[in-house]
Amino acid sequence: MQNEPLSTTADWEQRFGDDVRGLRLRHRFTQAELAQRANISLSAVKYLEKGRGSSLATLIRIARVFGRTDWLASFAPPEPAVSPIAMLREHQRLAKVGTKRVRHSASSTRSP
Image (cartoon, rainbow, N blue to C red; front, side):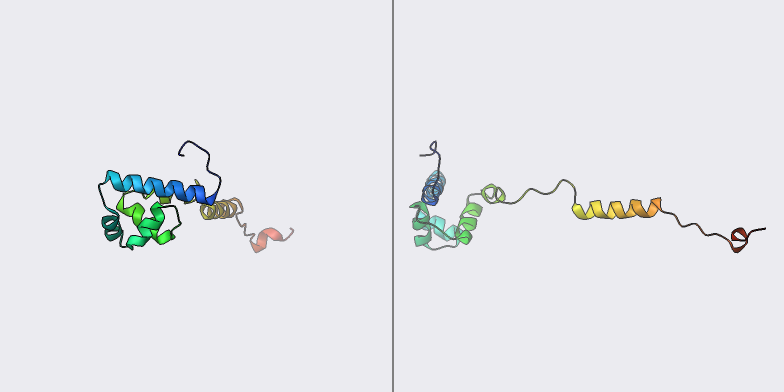
């Protein structure tokens, strides 16, 4: 199933459950051991591995147990290369530098 395109939520849940089960077996954890390490219920592990859905908190805890927080990081939006606030401040700074005030003395404004 891993090479087939996934289109439904159920497909993704099953794929993720299969991946978690594979990681658990590679680490030689029982479902009960994984549940204990992740501080979740045994039934939460069973539901997840069967592709029956899970809470975000459960997914985060399991990802941490396996050192796979990259799964979570892939959902985070990319950091902007340039801060919009920094750009605004630089624009304002340059605008102030470009407009210098000129003070005219009282004698220079009078005609001779």
